[in-house]
Length: 112
Image 1 (spheres, rainbow, N blue to C red):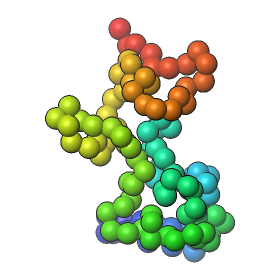
Image 2 (cartoon, rainbow, N blue to C red; image 1 turned 120 degrees about the horizontal axis):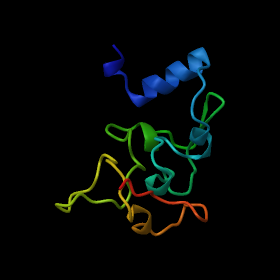
Image 3 (cartoon, helix red, strand yellow; image 1 turned 60 degrees about the horizontal axis):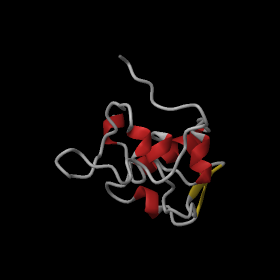
Image 4 (cartoon, rainbow, N blue to C red; image 1 turned 45 degrees about the horizontal axis):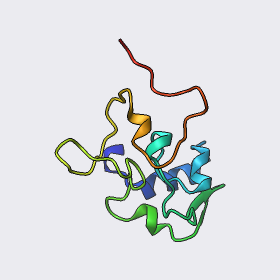
């Protein structure tokens, strides 16, 4: 069952059957989340999965429990623990990060 697949199993399947995958894998992102809280792993982007081939040390992505490494970086839950899930974005969230990814005139909209 898919539930037992590792991230490596997934990439092996992608390679074997030439399944389209997210183009950011080729630029160093193992797990794709929100643009504002997802980073390359490692941060220099030296590990990539491109055209069915690994570039760099794939264990940076495929080690045990690393499937979501690079996601929710620097985010904390209200109790101070590190976030592991995104949750719902609220107004002001775009101002809580050290990098501005919002195009001019864009941002989180209030649902009031």
